[in-house]
Length: 227
Image (tube, rainbow, N blue to C red):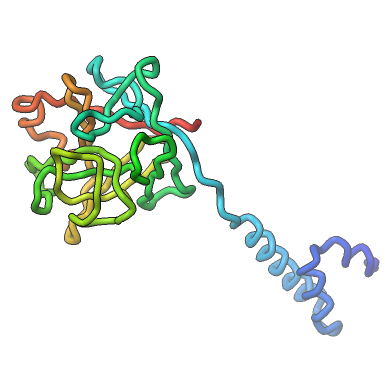
């Protein structure tokens, strides 16, 4: 025969209330299952608390000497993000909301501009092409609080097309990805730099021959490093 005190104290408070409300005439097994279900739901509600945002910097790597370093706080004269070594510039710090699998904003924490977000600005005044073989290119820049469209502002001076900042995703391996949507299709973008200026760009088609042959750009990878 079980002690009433021991069986009641073994249940968390929400489950204990549920057990007390059950009819004493119920089968003990039914009573136990009801209490267990309530305990599980209470435990899950506690574990679903929001996780804190992540703060860090973005490392840049490639097979080219100019493509290794960090995204810095200093902007090029064109207003485009630069890849610099730690001894040359202070790495740019960003805040990323917790969670994966969705597109985020990356908030600028120590930027040398009045803009709030890490984003990109397309070269063309018209919508960029996301199709294979596309020659569209976007400058990585600081972007205003507006989400999309030509009315947004950015630090980019030469590039004055569409702008956006809710484009980022940080994967489990800390790889930083960007996805652009034109309302019809979405495209994961590749990152490249101009080795001469160290300016950082995003392109829809990483295999386009014009990147290397005409512009001389070099493919790079971005990785998030916690502060």
